[in-house]
Length: 124
Image 1 (cartoon, rainbow, N blue to C red):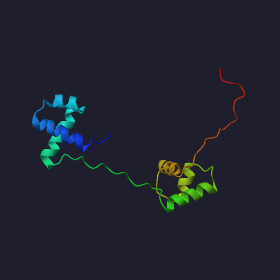
Image 2: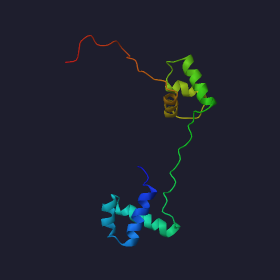
Image 3: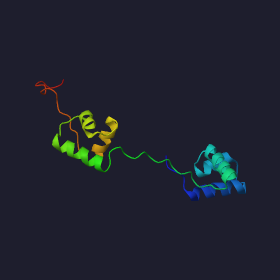
Image 4: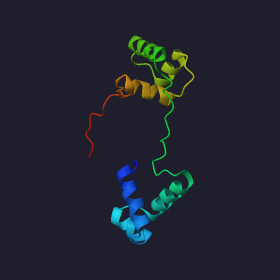
């Protein structure tokens, strides 16, 4: 979900202050929810600011720097290694999904192979 612009916030607050209409009418006019207007006005009352709250940051990736280079080396040495094998050999305390995300960042494609020959009869 995207943060509403500062300009929109200012226009909504100005409309509420000038008494242009009810909160429901202002919400329809600016295509926002009445709950958002209520929270915006509450934030202004409590903090004096209508600026958006800072967005939460993500955790840094488990595989970066030397660990990412080591993973790349392991993959080049044995390209058919499973994610679990790569995780165990890397020595990094992480999940299999962290290995997958690291491979995506390295732009390695993990193409699946058939475990048996293709059927000689076509599907009907």
